[in-house]
Image (cartoon, rainbow, N blue to C red; front, side, top):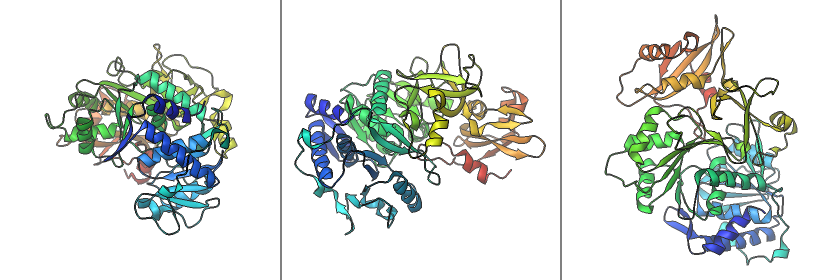
Length: 502
């Protein structure tokens, strides 16, 4: 089996149903299958064969999905690129991935480097394309016969996805067809998708979560609505217009919806499933979600690019009861908390979160030493500190690299952040360690206050002292209108440490 089989089945069973919607355009499963077949034929005649790396630099679009399935048919390796990177970053990733062809949306042409080591041609998607680029529409050829292409199995590589913020030292996660197939099974079982579902997917396809879910959508023959650029008002209007049943997005995106929400302006009653992930969600946002989606069950996902990306899920039954947990392991995933010697720790004891299963990456592309470190003893070492309770629920304490050591004692930022975000005046909070002459590091909280909230640093420090041991409490609280985030909507704590001045 390979990922292209998902589209074969969906097209055979639901040829006239809509597969993907993007802005005013849509495509049925039957048409998507035909176009993927014709595009794969054109690419093969351009010399794209099994194992070739093909990069994509584009916002979400129907063409993006066509390209992905054409590449999966050929056994070529998709390399989704973050269009928010710089020219130099793009050049580094093209060279590292050894991309032979770059599909580039016209609006991102200025990001294309003048030369890359293996890059043979640029194919322009949409808009006016430069003379040096080949036009996307001219690639399509009559579909191939079965014996014209190489067999593609679940063991073959399907994608190289670069983890956020690693362009200076590229860390490309190599995922196979089998990895992404198992991720699809995990998501399908956890979220109970069906062909009747219409999911709004406003997050970018270059991110591992959306990239993995596109195959899940096709496997379940559901309709996916792709958004080129997130707008809370636009997304709420789409939900009403298309009677969306499911939505997956980061907490900040839900928060932006909540900030503009007004009763009666949009009808969102069709939504039965709202999924979040990538970062903790504040108690205020969790409470507010029920206003926006009164009939929905709420889910929280924990994942990593290295896991294709799903690791654990918190279901509606536990979304509020175990509000600070990221849930239990998904269908095919084993998870444990381990000490420095990689031995399993008892419930409640903080260690590094390790996981294994058929969805775990093959390794980092062209980085055998990093791969050996990450996958030692057959387990993915996530770099996340956390613990597992007696019921099997996973709790994160923060990234190992973000742990604060003050007076020789470990302080876990997530624990402090969770307390801060319980205060009604706090919209978001990030906790970092800042160098201190006496203690080594001191705890500093950077807070985004709720609009029009009355809040002072002393008020929040007192709030923490009532709920935390004294050594865990922030010594400094500072306010900011927003926190720096990467493309995955995760807070960039290294940026906060770089620019923070106590």
